[in-house]
Image 1 (cartoon, rainbow, N blue to C red):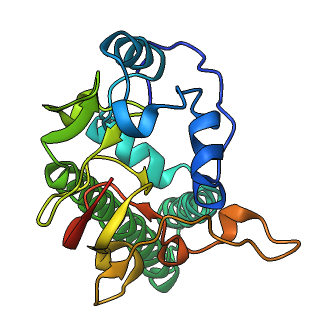
Image 2 (tube, helix red, strand yellow):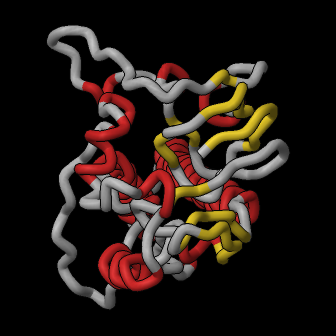
Length: 245
C-alpha cells in the first residue's frame, strides 16, 4: 500500500519481513492492541491508519505521452552512435554528389547506410513502445483482479468494507473462493490453501501455516522465495480451500 502524494517527498518505511515474525511479533510491529486477534482494529484506529498509510491500491504511474515514450527509447548511447554514423554517411553522400565527377557507388552506399540505420532505430523504437504498452495492460489486468471488498474485524464485529479501505493491522477473514484483498500474515488457518500460480508458478494450491518461517543463518529474510513464505497470502490470489484469518 502506498500513500499518494502530489510531488511530495515520501519518507521510506523500513522493510519488514513479516514471514519471519511470530504472530506476537507481528502484532507488536503493527503497533496494535494485544486483543487484535479477537476484536480487530477500532474504527478510530482504522481511520488513523488509513490517513497514515493511504488507500490499499496499486500506485498509479503518471501517464506518458507518445513523445515521452519515443524519447525514452532513443535516449541511449547506442542510438546516439547510430545517429552519428547516419549523419556521417549522409554528409559523405551529399559531398560526393556535389563533386564534379561523383562516384555513384559511394553515393548509393552512403544513402543505403542511412536508410538501414533509420530503419533499425525506427523498428527498435516501435518494438519498445509495444512492449511498454503490453506491460501497462498487464498492470491494468492485475488491478482488475484485485478484490473489491474485504471481510474484516472492526470493533469486535465482522463487517464488509471496500478493499481499498483495508489498512495494516486489519484482521481479514478469508473463506473458500475469496480473493485476498492485500498481502497478509496468517494468524489462524483451517486447512487454508491459496492458488499462487501467477506468482510462484506452482500449479497446485499452497498450504498455509501460522508459524514463523525459519530463516537460515546468514540469509536475508527477503531472499526467501514467495512460494516458501507459507504463512503469507498475497493480494489478488484466490483461496482454493479452507479458511483463515
